[in-house]
Image (cartoon, rainbow, N blue to C red):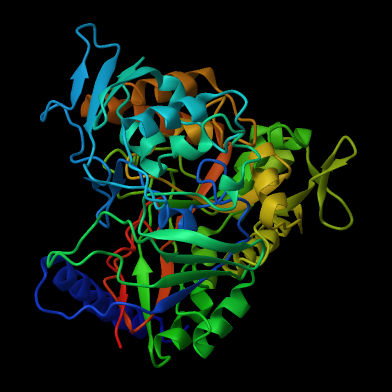
Length: 539
């Protein structure tokens, strides 16, 4: 990676060009957008379902098909989509009860919106979405936000009044942002088994026309899409988008070079230099709201419930070396709240790399090295499986570094990598000993989904009543100072307990054809495909 600095500079220049083209597009300044064409995208994972509420992965394809009431833009700021404005206290869209324990959020819906089958979109669809998601019979990856609502009123087809049981500052990042379900096609059906999971109906710029599991998804232009550009031209510009399933990173890169695909994200850092110099391609470095983590399964081997073992792992982990092995792109961090957020704490307990201290901790806890160098106590060896997503070469590279570092302090780690549904199930159900991966959050994240005792992403089984109380406070106040204090106290306590080690914050490398105009990367978990209607291919 000797050309890393050069590559980074070139990336910034190219990103600037992409940003300028998007700005011209949005301002209507005379750049001729070409209608038509097909954009083929490479996805580095096998899709489990196209139902955005059921998938265990990012909803990349889904974001081009279904829409929410609001969505985060490229600055991680919420903007209106199917709603005409983002509700706030200032504009009267949010009213907090006199006792400060509940709130009412009112959405005014955009008139004239149709589903891709031509049927009108109304407030009844929004209420139906809530009723469907909260139904105990529906098996969802996350029902985050549904239990916070006591009722929804629909006084007319374009007004939705959401009555919350609590003050929910994260309401924009939960239920109605990821997508609305069509009442007219789903009412009375079992969403667990319905064909919607393969062919979702949406109001977005594209509609699903083909889905071959494990191979590809084909999207065609939605002829009933509501959005127009500043010149009054109906969007989207593209005729078609094809998402190819390519779980192997090396194959993904090969197809980028050959032109078989024209876009991919989470491209391996090791490939940046050569892709940056590849004619016809641009490399974009997207600073996403994510962090890499090394989790301990607290429901698994007893030794992982020993805080001395977890601390030893933390001291034995050389984050700088992991970053170097990945081209220097990742930046080491000490807390799970990435530095871009104002409430990220610099005062958490820290575990700087110190292999000698790691070995001392294990010695003091009674773990003695055997003839093979691996430590054991009462006949139980410190030998564990470590899982990453198979085929994700960046994580697999980091995994090898971690394995070597742990061996140096007397801990054996053996790769146990999974892909597709097996990976998703293991991640959420704790089917691992140690787990290295990344989480990406919304623009207004709730950390209770990761570290709350009942958090849907808490597959490791971590539970701390004080953590639960702090996160409950953070999730139930509109007071920035109170929320900041709760989240900083949470970070301090979490890093004392150390159920998870925050390793690095990693930018996502996006590679796109130079012919793609109107593209601006999105740093949130709404994915880069949340606003595809303005994308176009230059002839």
